[in-house]
Length: 279
Image (cartoon, rainbow, N blue to C red; front, side, top):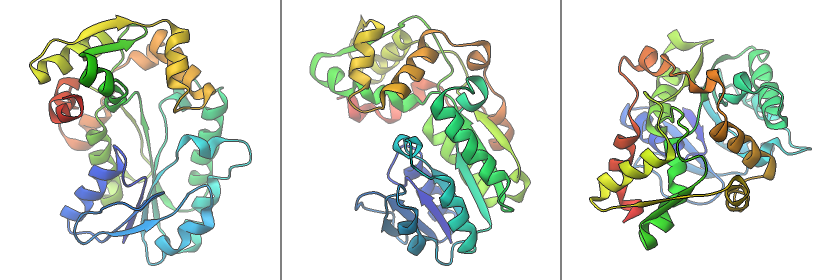
């Protein structure tokens, strides 16, 4: 049995499907009730209360651990999940971490994530750590404005970073869960090229077959929008990277190719597969 947390999200959903299609028994965990692929057990659990995950862990041999932002708040204990997994008999954990642990290690959220990584390394379990950069699916923030006004509004319109397709993260996670060769691996996951917000808007327009206007936002305007769904510190961290990426954040990593034997998918591929969200 493999347990997938965050199973209804942009990474967890395709990962759950891939594992089920590979013939593995899967337990999908999310905060709210949701449909699951045929043959997949679904368990509702809030990871901010690690004890509630224990029923999902019964009989599991592997765990994909995705931690939402609120699990890095003061008083949260996400590393407790690793201890409970070990006590339940889990032998392998694949952790979805963040590129920022290495590229910007001193922010509060990265220090918290580093502590989780360290707890996993010290757990005695088999492990792999995935450190993705920015997600292509962050473009879904623009879905409503594209649907209603055929417009994208974003800061730093001509600053590019190599955003990664969540489907690639899911495939790498599946490989790490299923293949012992990846035990002890730390993988930085990016897309194949630098792409600016303006070019992302152009890719969405191409997928739609309809023009999409690009409107520049100031940093303050962007932060006010992002703060509706992200902690303020995480919004600032994200804007720091988007506005002034350092050399490590501009690097196109070879790790997707190394694990999957193919190049990572470009943003245009993600836009074409997800075009319905923008119609």
